[in-house]
Length: 168
Image 1 (cartoon, rainbow, N blue to C red):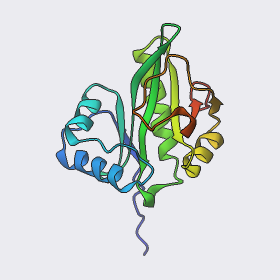
Image 2: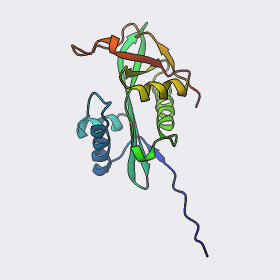
Image 3: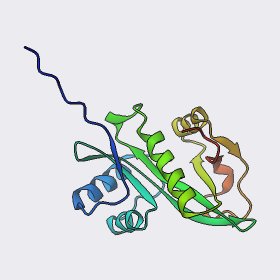
Image 4: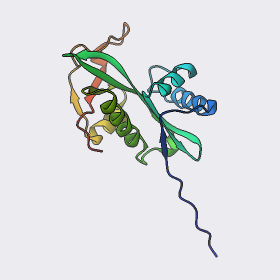
């Protein structure tokens, strides 16, 4: 007789006090070549505590992470940048990134009455560019009042996408 395997779903969380989840997030970010910055564990913990991030767990293993942060204002409207979006390679193409983005959109709408949510993608990151286009994100010019980048990170090296109109 064949046993039924239990289907385990991906679960999203805004906070964890499990230090191994924090380390797993950092390792995911470190392994992903397209990320410009790898966050320190204390920063990841702060992001989650302040409800500015989301982690995806499968069987208590971290398989994804994403965050947003305020990066300027446009006409007194906060511009929130989605960043550090990462999904474990073995769990890609399963809708995890979209679930995390939708969760961040929901959190941002709850936290901020009005905000512009933006994804910033390096022009060399073709996979992320295609992903956001397929998601229905609208490519936009760099938002006026958007945050500053360190020298050498000119805006001509990035694509900007508005996430406000994507369908969940």
